[in-house]
Structure formats: structure tokens, C-alpha cells
Length: 317
Image (cartoon, rainbow, N blue to C red):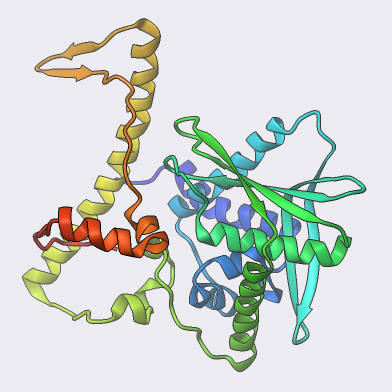
């Protein structure tokens, strides 16, 4: 379908505007290691700094969800004495370390960081990458402020309205891990040597995945009909993801209406839309059990465990 003149203008203008905004608020991110750099794949962070990375318009719009979440958190904190975009700095091997803290509450006794994060569904605990980013911030903040520090992460799903807060205490071990990752990245930049790729949740959206050793491991090039089939699968999968997001958003809207109107079932032509009741259930965290009580875990697996065979399947990234 031919793009309208307005769509063509938006696709040309939005990347430029967002880049200018980023430089104005965060500076040139190629010149320092930020908290998001050490929380993500170091190869991606490295290539973002040594290459001119271009993102498609859909990805840029998705990135804006983080700024929308920040705006919501700003309103959540209304009435408190809040500092915003607090810049904290450090250096490693003469290269700058810098972080821009979303929100900070400070009194004579301590500093409390509040970070806003956008999610697409509810979560039960913060992602490891978030925790490393916050530890990096807390470490730099403790150097700059010389007082006790801690943090809260506020995760928000702007589609469903779900949110949850996670308190994060300063952890010297994790902070040093974050600093080691920063040092690795700085060394890679100075030596012009690409760091090892790390599998992340966002690998499928990475702008550097085409030449990523991790993604290309074991991959073969195909031609002709098979190449066309593979292309169709990838295209249909992209459409499926977009449709699933649209469907999820409309389900939330319908659920709110049905709950408000006290309707349990709706008929539309030959289909029925039903509202299931809320429920909860208990389960055993086998990973935690294996770590904390290995002997009990082995006994239970030996007595009650069962082997489940799973048919192979196609995975698309």
C-alpha cells in the first residue's frame, strides 16, 4: 500500500526528533558507558557505540513506551520532593561512566532511586538486567553523594494498567559485577574488539542480529523455494505478533466492559466471548527447591517425577 505524504514525513521526521531529544537529555551516548549499556548484551552495546545504528519506526515507537511510563511514575510521585534525571558520573581507564537516574528522593540520611520500567505483561520479579542497571546507578550515586542508597523499580504495563514496585537494596557484589561489565565494554572499545554476544529477551529485535555470531551459529543459507518459504514464515510471524498485541489490547477493553456491566457471555455471530472468573493456585518453585533443598528435590523427583517428551518445533527470532 502506498504511503501517504504524512506517513512519509513521520517516518523521516520522528527518528531525527528522537535522536535530537536523546542527545539533549542524555548527551552523546557513544562517549560514555551508561546503565543500560551494562544491563544488555555487551556486543549490542559495543556496536551501538562504534556503528551508526538505525532503528525502524515501529521499534522507535515501542521505545517511547519507556518515556510514557516515566510520565506515569512522575504523577505517582506527585507531592514528594523529587529530583529528576539526576546525573551521576565516574571513570574507568579514563573512559566516562555515567547514568541518568529517572527519579530520586533525597534527605540528609539517604538517597532513594526510583526507576520506571515498561513491560508488556505482568512479572513477579525484576529482570536481572534491571537489577544490574540499578546497582550501577547506586554505586555511582554512593560515590557522588557519600550516603546510604537504595532503589525502587516501578514496572508498568501501559496497555493493561498493571503495575508493581520492587525494592532493590545496594549489593556490593552485584555492583562490582556491573562495573566489571562496564570495564569489559570500555576495553572492547579501546581495543576495537567486539565482545562476545549474549542471548537476551530482545534478540529478535536487535539491529545487529544479522551478523551476530550467536544468532548465526549453526545457520545455513538456503535458496529458491525454501528461501521463499522461510521468508513467508518470518513475515507471517511478524504479522502474528502484531495481531496478538492488537488482540490483547482489545481483550483488556472487553474485559473491563464485561466486568463493569456484569456480563459473563457475549454472542457475536457464530462466536461466543466468555469472561472467566479470577482464580489463584499454588505451585512449587522447583528451581528454588533444587537450589535450597537438593536432597529433598532429588527424593521428590525420584518418587513423583515423570519424563515429558516434547515434539520439535520451529523457533523464529
